[in-house]
Image 1 (cartoon, rainbow, N blue to C red):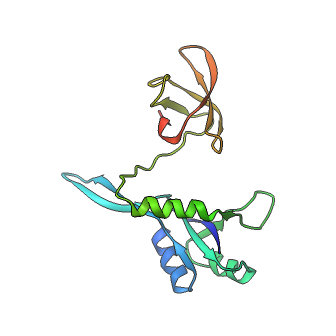
Image 2: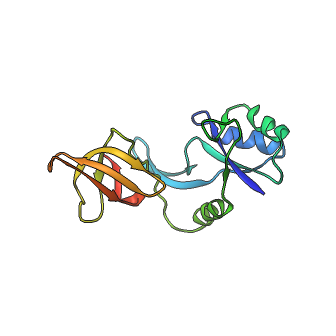
Length: 167
């Protein structure tokens, strides 16, 4: 069994999910409950954990299966290496971890990593509250190089996702 990430058009995750299930493709669309503010009230809604993405599982990867996914309305592409047309697999251990998170009662807050060139605020640790510009980001190693205006220096900091946010 191999899982692959599928990138969808904006807000098409549910439609793509339904289309893939109709084509008998094993599909996983992780969703989380968040509070949404409406005009005069707050309401709990279910949204995709990863906006614009869902996962498909193939017991054995074939071009026919790939074509079945890619021709589903709303699918943009399957994630792969930039220099190859072959999609890359998502490790089963990561899919299992996501499934456990979704099944748990833990409140999950989606957050976006700041990108290079964007202003960021450190939210935890010794540099908490300091803002700067992300000069370099290595998401796999959780290493961010942040240029801190106040100090007029750039520092490389190991941070987890919850410790840095867009400013």
